[in-house]
Amino acid sequence: MLNRRALGAGTLASLALAGCGGNRRKRIAVIPKATSHLFWVSVKEGAETAGQEMDVDILWNGPAVETDYSRQIQILDSMVAQRVDGIAIAATERKALVSSVERAIDQGIPLTVFDSGLDTERYDSYVATNNVEAGRQGARALADLIGGKGTVGIIMHAPGSGSTLDREKGFREVITRDFPNIKIVGEQFGMSDPARSRAAAENILTAHPDIDGLFGSSEPSSVGAALAITSRGLKDKVSLVAFDSSEAMIGDLREGAIDAMVVQDPRKMGFEAVHTVVQKIRGEKPPKRIDLLAVVVRRADLSKPQTQRLLNIGQ
Image (cartoon, rainbow, N blue to C red; front, side):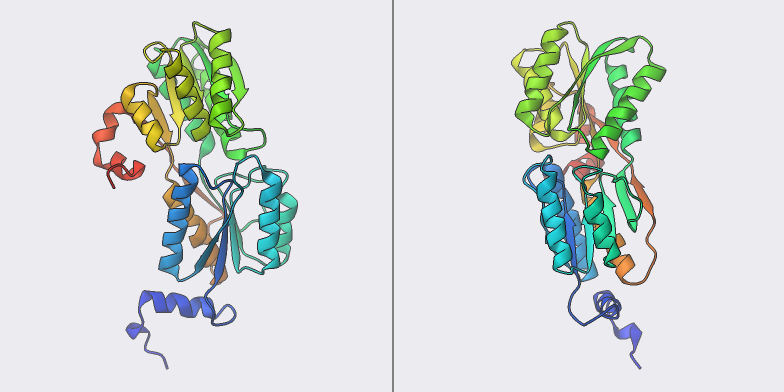
């Protein structure tokens, strides 16, 4: 009989996984919406940390840009054909990925959806920021910055992206319901591209020269909006609430182009996405839904240790 006390946690995890079929290390495919933005780089770090702790191999692969859902479908179908042991996927489009996701589930592959929802609930677990509430947080922050009155615009992400659509929905809900003296006068998609997001922001700023604030619902939307505000010399006139963070965005927060950021914890998201897949492989029942909370970060918060850890400042 095995002396379980003599076994380390890593060995126990290996044995548990081995019991699910074969002695090889399990392979978990982690498929992000894209691979370029800092958010996804941080998700990868969290997923790889989980892989190391749980003794599984992480197969990281995603499209180059968040609007290329056909490429994401190809990657997902390829992972299914390889018979990976589990899949975690952040769907670029909530409808287009359903058939491929359900095909993986029909083949008995444990599957977690993370970051963005799908028009199916047949997955094992869903790990994401509560994006509707995060959008509400962004609305409250912007309303506070402009004194509860004035006009604002939204630099949206891309059609069909569940997470950002939810943020935009939450933002509109709070502005409309709680701030009757604030009017949303412009909304344009930036299509997950900083240059196109800048053009979208420029269009709104041109059409509404007296606008008081902007909300960017994603990293590229926020970067583009900050560029437009900076190029027009409007740092002191137009308040910008951004979503997510990057080194450039932190610099913009310090210098005034961004006034507040609604920040997720992408490392925790990546970690929990892998963790729930491994739980399923081990025969456990992972939570059907894990909601992660976002945090509003302002300029004064950048010196706080907890903010520096979240934003990976000085690490």
